[in-house]
Image (tube, rainbow, N blue to C red):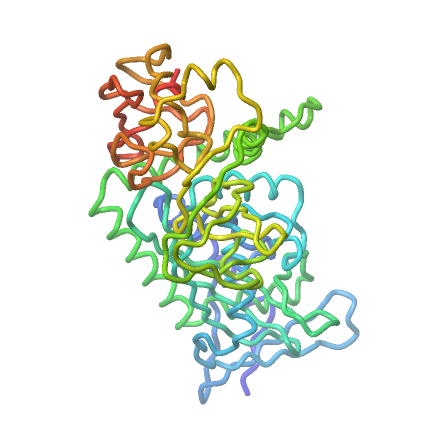
Length: 438
């Protein structure tokens, strides 16, 4: 086996790293998508290259400063394995699902070193992420037993867009004392860091990275509107995270969009009790608002349940077998709303047409009578004053194009007399309730 001098290795590594930094600086779009809405692992798995080959095997001598003898790591030039470890696949899918949901607690349970700033970043990014339909794991074995370098290829669907943008993250995965895999984002010693760097630039890993970059660039070239959104998003996120950190330092309470909706829905629930009917033939009922949560049972077409809460992430909380459970909002419809205590406003708004147009969400379930008194703009740029659903047509039962969070800016196209306003948002044209525009 061929031994490579450590000083020579380090020199070549730094040279390659400088070249890659220049490449990333010249192409900001590629840099962002590789971050993939989730910052690259802080353990510094970065591009650099030195691979000494002989009979498809390379040996690199790495040593810590206080070592009396050099510790040798043999780095075989083995090909990437694709989805070879089911436990790691499940870990990655769980992680990306939590990113889409803004579920910081789940991420903390499977990833180390999640600080306050990263928690805010996760929540902010989740507002723009609809889902991760594709997650594929490419793995190389780490230097220690039960450790892996995982290059996770994903395709992310952005709220308001039909496209699935490709990306690639590099992770260092270990197994804990309970035999469970987790993402290790703790600071690593120099020896391990060097090992990871060398693995990350083997030919097949570099080829994978290049393939993803090309695919993403081609997507941007085909859709200039999407390209503009993706280019501007990093700066927007940086600003939003900075504002939240400033509020924390000032001792202010952070107001999350989901909390805003939950508060509004709670107020509504104090006044009415909603009943929903299942519209699908059979649908799973789960313990929490996630497709990976424990299955509690099934609900069938025509069955009716009490609606406790409809969440902005597409799940509804219902009463199932005398306890709270979750079901996808896509498969339920509101069939009745019984006032707990009648008010003057309720009496004045008792219009059957308005009741038929009630939506599951408290954000766009308001009577048309409100349209006559709202002071929303008729033209120009407007801001939504709370989280609201963005729909294809001027109807609460129309297809949902996405969600616009409080403070989001839209372009007003036309204000309708039926309480809806036609707008442009994120390159799409659709409708929101007029009363939520200011």
